[in-house]
Amino acid sequence: MSVSRRSFLRGATAAAATFLGQPQIRASETRRFVNALKIPALLEGAPGAGGKLYELSIAAGKSEFLPGIPTPTLGINGAYLGPTIRCRAGDRVTFRVRNDLTEQTTLHWHGLHVPASADGGPHQIVEPGAVWEPSFEIKQRASLCWYHSHLMGRTGEQVLRGLAGLFLIEDEESLSLRLPSEYGVDDIPLILQDRRFNADGSFDYLSAMPDAMMGYKGNVILVNGTADPHVVLRRQRTRLRVLNGSNSRIYTLGRDDEEDLFVIGSDGGLLEQPARLRRVRLGPGERVEMLVDMQTNQTVKLMSYPDRVTAGGMGPGMMMGGMAGNTETFPIIELRAARLETTDLSLPGRLIRVPSWTPAQATRTRTFTLDMPMMGMGMGMGGMMGRRTMEGLMGINGRSMNKSRIDVQVPLGSIEIWEIRNATPLTHPFHIHDIQFRVLDRDGDPPRPNERGLKDTVLVDPDSAVRVIAEFGDFADPQHPYMYHCHILEHEDAGMMGQFVVV
Ligand SMILES: [Cu+2]
Image 1 (spheres, rainbow, N blue to C red):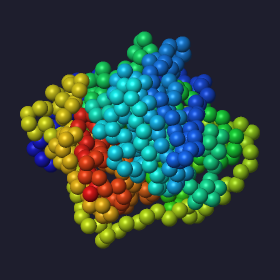
Image 2 (cartoon, rainbow, N blue to C red; image 1 turned 30 degrees about the vertical axis):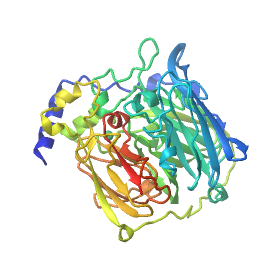
Image 3 (tube, rainbow, N blue to C red; image 1 turned 90 degrees about the vertical axis):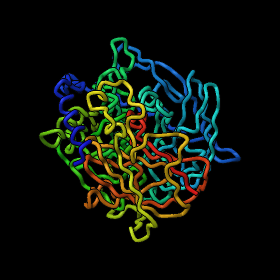
Image 4 (tube, rainbow, N blue to C red; image 1 turned 135 degrees about the vertical axis):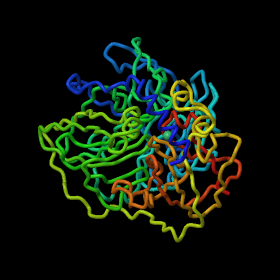
């Protein structure tokens, strides 16, 4: 262990001793799941000469999460969050993104393989009153992707206020598998977010000391913008498409009756085969598709359990886990079975074939070490904890994000291994734009069953190294960079981000 890391941990323990506690999730006994789950509207696009046109208007509004108390929010075609964009592989799509806010914003297509100039990252700023119109072909398989604000330094705040939505890609192959796919009926989207509220109903953001350092945590769980939600199911088998759309919270999903979840998909599409799992760990930005089987009149709660890594033991690790707020057990949503329609409960043994690049095919390995560049320069943990903004304090390979610096050049068409190392005491979800990768291994061990499909975001635990492999095809552009970054939005905003171009 390096000296700076030792002193970091000592500092962390001292800071934790004076720490009054992360806001606790409201206890389950006070929750009665009184609100019907909101299902985001589907936006299929208007057919035209140039493909499908999707109109997206970003505006401020008010939403009622707590009974009788309006919360100022941002939304896309609505007061909070956005519609679920749906398209088919091979479609030509155009988005007419109109910014009706009084501030800048961007919309990034998370998980999509698109030209860097259409990616919606920090360089594609949409000024107030302006319209941004990216157009591209959907060149990937069926998957649950999403879109969200990616404004440099303010992503955490804008996503928290509501600038996010789902992006559903279908293809012939996935539809031929006869998986549940009736949107909102037996194919239910679940956007998981946690929020805190001020007495006047407004969102409470970055007021608590550990928010910037540990990542923002709320004490109210929202699902699709619904507090205390339930959903009534009508078929024996339901597909849940879950996005962790939280700024920093890691969920460990499971059923309260301890029945298995049937995981069928990850970030970038279906798995090769279904995986029966009791628990599924889902970091910010990650997605999981799973099947839940129910019986008539049965009620099941989808839970989150303590994170096995950050809540795993004694010592600084546990201290940090407690501060990171991933230690609680709480219900997310109640699944209520009505009189259920009988459905086919057989499962195909094989779903799809996932690309399997081998290390031998890789032309090179790059190492990305997640770190805190200022840590060795005299700023201790206490000093960092007390800051409301962490701008420039988080980094990768010793450097904080700089929009005018290209960190990596990847030759077009190459297959590369990216090894992500974590030199901090916190778990980070690492996200790469442009591509979908396979996880090769985590500290030499094979990835978990739910991580064996295509992915664009992967959790990297403290003192851990994860190797991913991907092919960087299409869209050479030396001018416009793609991002790679931590998807704890407060860490991203603090500079744990870098830029690569494909040339
Ligand atoms: Cu992070």
